[in-house]
Amino acid sequence: MRTAVWQSLDIAARKFTPFLVALALVIVNLVPLHLPGYATISPDLVLMAVYYWALHRPSLMPAIAVFILGLFQDFLSGGPIGLSAGSLILVFAVAVSQARFFYGKSFLVVWWGFMMVSVGVGIIQWSVACIFLGRLISPDPALFECAMNIAAYPILGWLFFQIHRTLPAGD
Image (cartoon, rainbow, N blue to C red; front, side, top):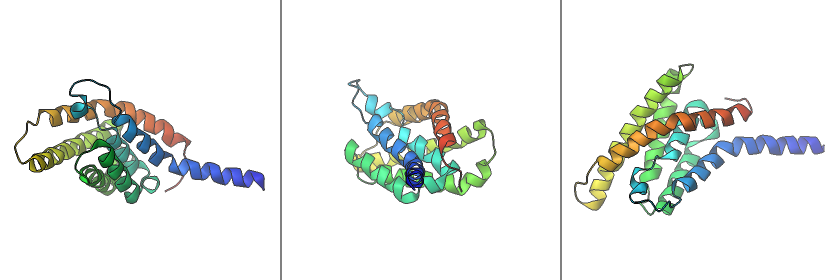
């Protein structure tokens, strides 16, 4: 009897792992490093997590969890409420809709898909920032953040893959 309870708890904990990892990445993403301009060019770690889990195990990172992550990120960052949430939901929708295409493809193809998604999100967030501020701002920080996202994805993708291997089979 005790073993069954612990096994059930273990399975439940593993099912929450993608969400909890993404939640930790929200906090890591917003840790102040006291470097001038770092916040505008740091990679969006949560974007990478949502893309990975939406492609590989969308049942472990449902849309409501993605929305909660985005709102949490918006509240902590002090940015426009809904910008991160909307962006992450868009990434989730695109990744889930294209999961069949990416299934079984090499990492380079998945990375290429992430590049396209990252550029799209960068353009949308830059456009919303321009509207929010009421003036045209330089796209340089958005472009650099996009480049940082693309450069960091292989590292986080590997980390997510290692976590993925420990999760119970499903979907």
